[in-house]
Image (cartoon, rainbow, N blue to C red; front, side, top):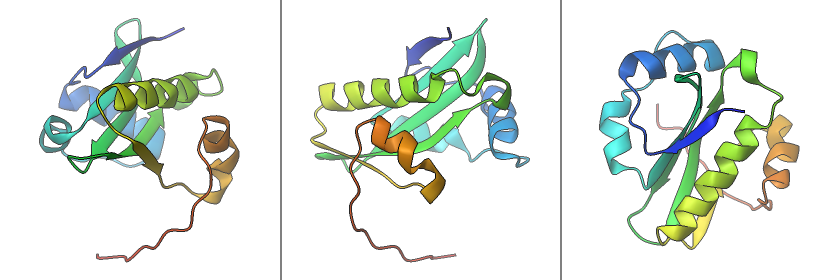
Length: 128
């Protein structure tokens, strides 16, 4: 079972490799600008290789947000994403967040409900 690390600051190469595999896109966002502002981020490591990741963004107050839950395709269906989200929930609570939000596509409803999230109505504006 992969080891979970809190706030590991993976290298851009590690994040790009995971991101490309997990999202089928060539480049990850520039996490060097994102992670220092995050409430927390959790990495899952198998034999010192990053195989899973979740970021917990926040508003600087009581609201935190699960973003970028990613698991390498070769490591899926082993409970890694669930462990990442549960650990992110624990750390966010420990660091003072009172609400943890997540946006997801309909096919992930069962996963996020199993992680303890309840449905809410929300709004969205596409800016770009």
